[in-house]
Image 1: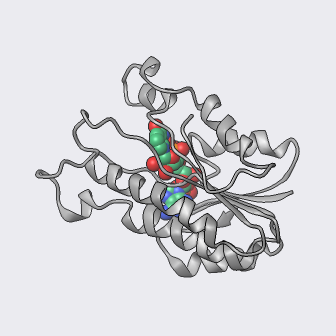
Image 2: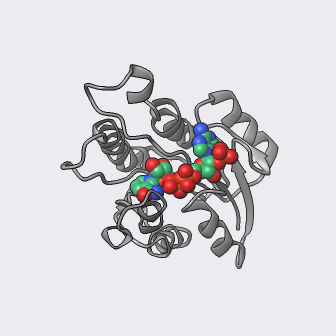
Length: 194
Ligand SMILES: NC(=O)c1ccc[n+]([C@@H]2O[C@H](COP(=O)([O-])OP(=O)(O)OC[C@H]3O[C@@H](n4cnc5c(N)ncnc54)[C@H](OP(=O)(O)O)[C@@H]3O)[C@@H](O)[C@H]2O)c1
């Protein structure tokens, strides 16, 4: 299959694109990637589909939020990811409904945040919104195109990169396996929690 991975240079996206490349033709996309796309920019999502042409699937593993407390951050800090992760992924699904081949797929990324950890309330809202969107969007998709989401908790490698205990998270290989599980088959409208 020909598959676009948006965020293919990231912690999850890089090993995912490498794993997929063994069996598929992979287009690696991001703001500074081989193919350029900014999920925060609706025009660039459209342009990406025009650039890549014929594709069977698209996976978004892009962007990362920043920790921003509800009372001690600016609006700009707090609402980081509204355009890219939330609206951007919904726009991606809407575009994919028109552009992905019959019987193709879209996989987006949400996430699970610990409610006891400060600075993640906006991320919690975005992830819950996306997880609500996926089953309803899947029911509306034309031409047999499937829509699913992968919703990881903290990834071990990310925790380690910020000086925290990686054993409290999920190894990225397990998260990559969840995306791989959604490539073939009939799973539709599901949110996977690796
Ligand atoms: N890491 C975790 O612990 C964790 C846990 C739960 C959920 N998640 C979610 O998983 C996704 C990926 O996380 P990650 O840790 O792999 O991220 P990451 O390591 O920061 O990598 C982000 C990737 O996305 C691209 N990107 C960033 N903003 C973009 C935009 N607006 N449009 C297109 N591409 C963009 C980056 O490349 P460019 O800079 O070239 O654009 C890069 O390839 C995010 O949605 C994140 O919220 C991560």
